[in-house]
Image 1 (tube, helix red, strand yellow):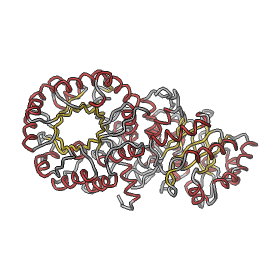
Image 2 (cartoon, rainbow over the protein chains, first blue to last red):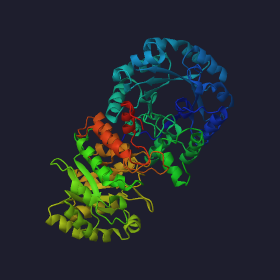
Image 3 (cartoon, rainbow over the protein chains, first blue to last red):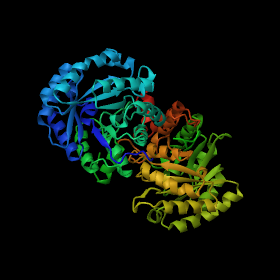
Image 4 (tube, rainbow over the protein chains, first blue to last red):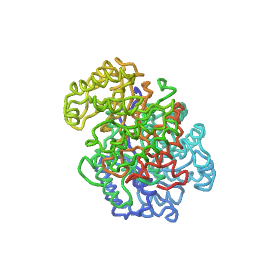
Length: 305
Length: 305
């Protein structure tokens, strides 16, 4: 495992990708306490909201309020999803540290999810990139369906490469490769990364796994072995439910940190403080945490879930 | 990933290691239907019971009845745990195909779990091996606490090597390395296997992970990369509960098979038939399956859990 990075950055997406996919609506105050807990746990890259229509994503309707009250500090970057110019203007007004745009590697997913082709979706981002440049904001690019698409099945690595390169050329500093439906396995992860790394510097790539089939940590291990050092994850495995049939939440930050700690890979997260933050937010949800490490650590500390 | 085996054998331990750790008592008839389902799913190595005192393990009290009615076929080996001479005689009377003995790599765990030292525990197996030889039965050796012990913490790979070599010298054909408390991570797995493989042929080693901290599949991936080709797992992740704080069940067979299939590693298991067998047994339990692949496949097939 000679390629392993000595240090990994975790992008904590629980407050956005996680909560957005929970049935329960969380109050602004509770979200802020949760994010404060994430900061206390040492997380330095936190996705805190999304400037999209509240008609489509009611869970993120309070993003401007969240950004107004975030526990700002020099060590932590708070980002938000900005799908278009309108969202970008709102994000700038709210004082985001960084923004993210979202494209798909699957033509069918793009059309069904945002009602336009991949190329059209990229065109929508042009004003976002222009505003980012004039406001000196970094733009992260998410690519969805990098392993599989619910409509098309497996996705060719070349399709992922193409949209990733387009996003980088438009101005993204980093591409987060999303296994949106969690169907990827280690061999597929290796094939995809081998294709991408030929043309894209590995330090411009991050991985974003959903744990639908329980493959996320094994896939992350392969990514680490290929030199990837940025991992997206959600506290407690937010967005997934451990006893729902279709639990498809993000990989849990606790499970990732537990693995990294065991492998001696620096990540800056205090796992007990993280579990405390997660426990607080799961108290507000209609199900327990998907994270095994979180449950095990809670049990060890005699807490009950 | 050049060392990957082309083919993997799965040792299905759900009917023993799994059910033994469930609160619900399952009837003999239901167990038999479950095992029939496992055979239909293509599993060829099935641990079907344990000949221990029913005072200690009431869930396994019907093992003789199970073996009397098993769906025997030439392609499937049914094994049982035999902790001592008395158990071995009962196992032989019941017509087991293979037996297994159980030692620990941790002195403290051995003393607390079976009230004797590791050396004393091995001595107890001498009549078991003698009877196995005279009855032409293969003996598998389980080594527990290979990564960590609940009383001692981390366990030195040399301690695992020592007891493994002793069991092989006594007559075991294979050692199953058990991460009993599920604390191991990929780096530790690599260190352990590197130590063992120096002195033990890799085809005499199997891995047996519990998924307490969600690390099992990542650890199995490392084992595969080291050339290990025998994996213990339990249908549905039996023995663990997805919403209990201390879920520490075996890694789920479905999750392992999903990964192997994705990697093109032959394993002989029909995952849909396996999910059907698991769904039947989980209907009898007080909680849903821990296996994410099982839940995802059930959801895909519009079943409800």
